[in-house]
Image 1 (cartoon, rainbow, N blue to C red):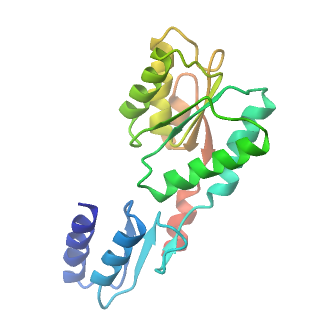
Image 2: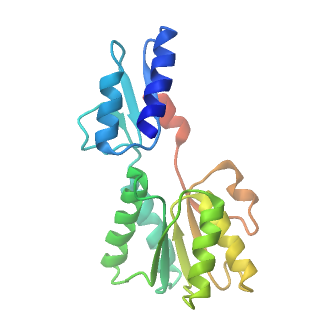
Image 3: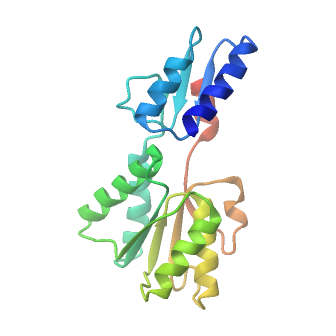
Length: 200
């Protein structure tokens, strides 16, 4: 499990007499508390856990990112929008999904489909292909990370549709490879360098 993996890694690092731990692993609130309790004698900082959890943590503000994605599609005139979330066990996935719902509702838009992937490109492909095979064809998709967006783009293309012309895709994270997608992916930038500097 994630808790066991984190505890094992933490104990291994503690044996090397590190002065602190930065834990970047998707844990739910209770699991994060359990892992922190196991990290004795050194400070531990968690990434990607709820800011409501009573532990030391840093998390991106997904409020602005989700708003930008929705506003971009609305400005282009899209009303038929599908959502491809990350695994809802992840705090970031839940916050991004909640943000999309918030800003779509503000624009009086209901998503025509909502799917859950596992952050991988293959899950993006499978979930999008299943949606299209069911006859649900949005004009745009909001996707919770760039890897799943890559899979979604492949599914769109294999279905005989055109990314951008038929279905617009907005990813999330602005990973280094996103500009190499065909066509280049529109994506929400996250400043991972700043996150790392702040964590340290």
